[in-house]
Length: 220
Image 1 (tube, rainbow, N blue to C red):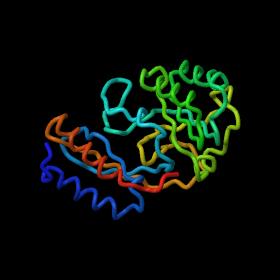
Image 2 (cartoon, helix red, strand yellow):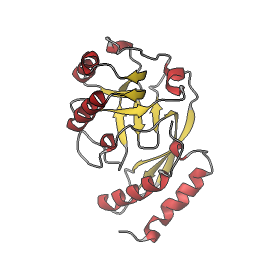
Image 3 (cartoon, rainbow, N blue to C red):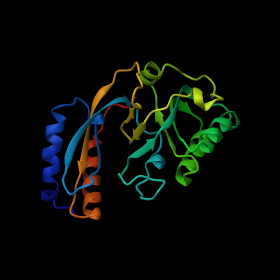
Image 4 (cartoon, helix red, strand yellow):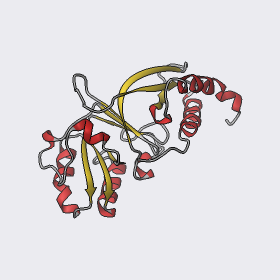
């Protein structure tokens, strides 16, 4: 279903939303619960994009999302570190603790070892530890969450937690839990809820919109 007329309403909505934001990374989309396409707004913290496409698997199921090329993590623990280059064994206690608690993990880092990255990818794909690694670089995460870990934390209750993390290739956004006061520069996030005539039609329109939004931008 590649008729551009079928996407014209989405392009009209996107054009209107773009007038309200300065960066495509502040525009996100999800499946609507009705046949109609609508726009809503939330306050979020903008961060860097995913380290690997394996965190953004285009698949449906209980463990994965149905938004193409986007990962949504519920109640993730957020570990900000300049470098995740220690031996994997140093990180395993944290990974096991988060998994045992039934939570998800978002790692924000400028460098990561192949072994740690691969371990997080495998566990994310298998849904044994839902999570993702995103890029750090401009200090926003540290400014907002108030902690940069030089070594993996040993107690998960000391690790900041968000209500949600939405991740894609070009950027990520954290949504705080109600009552949380982050020190970072919170921004207005526009969310387009995409409708369709059927589930397959809706998915086709979501893919088109995500592809359009993910124009080349400066990576962190």
